[in-house]
Length: 285
Image 1 (cartoon, helix red, strand yellow):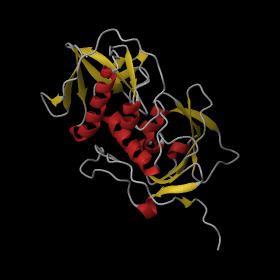
Image 2 (tube, one colour):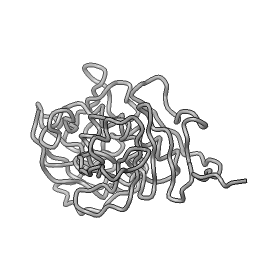
Image 3 (tube, rainbow, N blue to C red):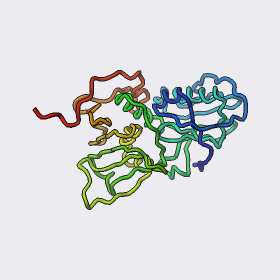
Image 4 (cartoon, rainbow, N blue to C red):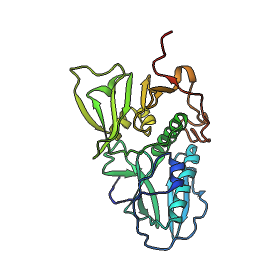
């Protein structure tokens, strides 16, 4: 495990918005050297490893082989960064929708790492980005079904919750505009609502991810959206106009690649407009 800290890279451009499904925040980055082309990556040594040249550096990505499609998206992002002369060093931190990747030097290469989610992720990283990419794939599927661009969060930001809510089966996530600081704007409550005796607390995203990973599927939806969960899965998405844009009971599963439980190609195609959403409350006859 390695400690993580460093410079956050932002302003990834239009290509990053397409790849990650999130709006990019502008950040000025000073390049330290002229960039040269990125060579196509190839799997080496054993399945699940990708090597790519980044200027005069070499990047190494470890991930489950079933996530090859997601790794390719990540490599395209590296290509965009290189085209913009963005340097990557051990101090670089790269936001990708819901989390942040880092880079660690190892035998002349820079290994791409993700937060070590079960083991103090705000301090430690690990050299396998499968959890980050698989979660991002599911989030992209949700955004495409809702027909909206995502609003990024980070694994160490916080969600306002009701104490003990993660132990309940039926849950509701509602997103409001973030009040600032380390708050995502998400509110997590029992699906039936809040009682007067309930106590409020704030939990980091990574704590929620470790306890109830399915909740992360909806967490790139923008402010105004609501998501319902039951039985360990996302069941309903409601937009800012109080309209149901997707419901598992009537619409079935979200589009995904059945060949991989990790979801290497979840929502990988272009968004197809759906019929007008149904109101959350149907009018009385």
